[in-house]
Image 1 (spheres, rainbow, N blue to C red):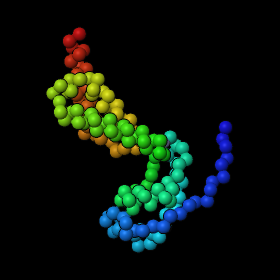
Image 2 (cartoon, rainbow, N blue to C red; image 1 turned 30 degrees about the horizontal axis):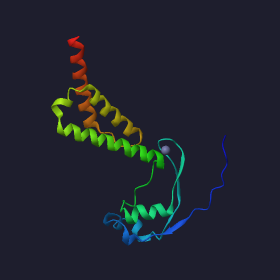
Image 3 (cartoon, rainbow, N blue to C red; image 1 turned 135 degrees about the vertical axis):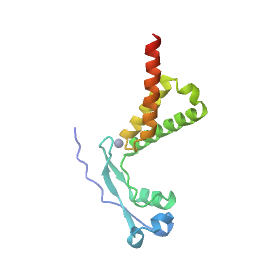
Length: 150
Ligand SMILES: [Zn+2]
């Protein structure tokens, strides 16, 4: 059930490199970029076609001051999901900072956190090797202790 859509012509928006972040202003692009053009891409996670529109680019680079080399790799839905996972991970880290003693023996907490890290990686987040190793060790210990006490 594939519908062929005729893509609209790519829109453009005027670029004002003086509004970019300081780092972006030092980039080569700052010397020649006069406008943004709609940029079609495929979501790295769900493989759906997505569009990084010229207007969005203007907002991202000039208002949010994102570095000019940063490209979109996720569609909007996946980006939102990925962001939600990142927030859950941050919540785990906050809980962990507060009660390491207790949580280091909490298998449910540890495996949930571990699962979130994996999920985040699927969205293209950088692997957090230190956290993954720590969680694996703690989980091994907790599960091992359970097995012995039975
Ligand atoms: Zn997607």
